[in-house]
Image 1 (cartoon, each protein chain N blue to C red):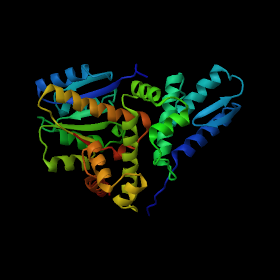
Image 2 (image 1 turned 135 degrees about the horizontal axis):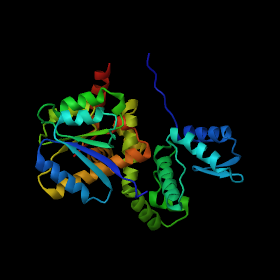
Image 3 (image 1 turned 60 degrees about the vertical axis):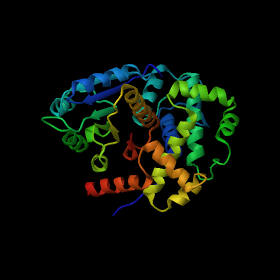
Length: 148
Length: 184
């Protein structure tokens, strides 16, 4: 079973954040394949293309130029094709309004971006492990809500 | 009009499995716990087709002994949590090792190795899942749910819910309700 891996996608306009994110995943014991996109337009182009490999988890930064995370979230949740993708909001904001609003719009996970690498690794590991349980045990994804 | 259905996953899967076996004309005996004894050995082609049909239902034939045992641990836990005349008052470690006839230490190590999580954690995830279902069904109060799932108090359940999901039971309920509102 351990030769399995999880596909993960991140859309974030901040280059440092993308770098930390990929590095954190490299150090986790769960095997992952990470792809990153610089903004919402690139992300949605990929998701809507024929050759797209849909990830198990998509991490979305809320504030991105051209197309925001919120717009991506709405577009993705309006399309049945993407219903199996768990969507994690990955944001610097932790306002209750943003959290609840994105959950209502169909996000599964809300992560406040951690300030240090160690916490980042911990948070990503928690997300992937729990998502793995939903994925492998047929748990009801409609009820999957997690805030970290 | 709206109706709500309650389904027992175990019976659903068993029925699907049995029908598929019959349709594929594989002679068998159902042993329960996801175990099936095949009479003789069907051709590779038959087995391949059979596995393909099952995979449409998300049912997978597990091959190696380790995965089989882990699957049994999971089934036992799910049965323990979701069955109404549940065995939650028995210590789960004792119940698992007696039911599966292995030491708890062995089961716990094997489980963590294959699933990336611990047995304790898996039980908590399942209990919280069940809590979510019961909250959404709406005919039990949180206190009644806590009692049903053998929590010492409603506070204990709320804390574990918050710790596992990051949100409180009442915000969970509110969010799901708002989502449904949005879909109308």
